[in-house]
Length: 95
Image (cartoon, rainbow, N blue to C red; front, side, top):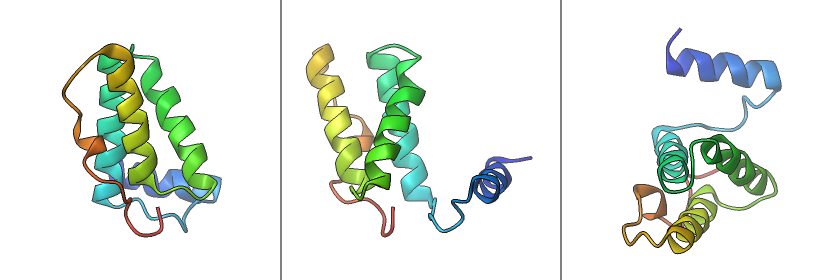
């Protein structure tokens, strides 16, 4: 099973088929998880992604929330280089 098959199966199982997970959304989430894992600690990656997902579920734009999270990661760790997750303020439509 590849990534796309997995995401389709998972979405069907948990009832999120109506939420688009396009390449832009995937890159935002993966970049955010990378930044959290490398700048904070590895367990922060899935937990950060979960909290960002909760915010998106409450109506926030994925890109904006990911940018806020990345900004916090960088300010807390003193890193000067934002990752690609902070590159956009607007998430993909519907995400």
